[in-house]
Length: 285
Image (spheres, rainbow, N blue to C red):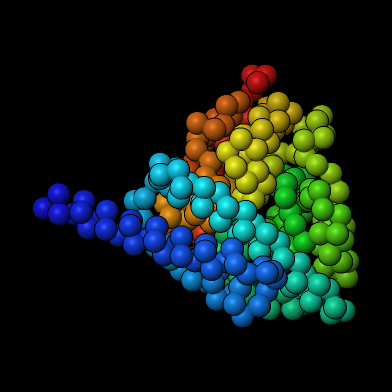
């Protein structure tokens, strides 16, 4: 029975890989990844293909498939940025943008992810009402910061870092009409690799899934955070598990020298990202 089960598993993996590669081929022929009927249909198909729990280890696939995975993660990152820019601009056309935020098709996912991350963070944070939190890679539609600031951390100041000035301009416009969030949501047009001692100001640092699209770049950012974050502060990272690793980079606990990994959570529902929480070592890294 065991060997039969492994055969079925192998067959399922082959079908999964075949489907993912086919979707990649279709995506790579598109002239633009801006939101459109074709783009939306292909990415919806990709997400639905990769969402079910799978024992596949995408980091150990053959070189050709690894190459496709790397390119696919970049395409996902580009498309996600374009989708967020589109909806941020649309929301920004309203006099009170946040009143209409639910028009973003994945808003409920961010509500769930925000609740999950807040719950996990609450188990480990020493101060239940942190004064300052940093979010690295906040983008044009900083929904995590908005959800956490609105629903969970109602006195915390959120420092949103993104190297794209136009993304920050769109994001800032979303909260400008809100008397509370406009005061507590700050935006920095800064490469986090250029921020040094300032990182020690934050009790919690969130690292977006698409900051560092490959292992090398991701580890450079993590090493930088390990060097400059305050001892005892928390790092909240997003990763991926199983077939979801075709969509986002995977971070392993072993990729976090200078941190004590406290918890790893792999959602099984439509929240795609895994969550890792780690504490900065009290010893200098």
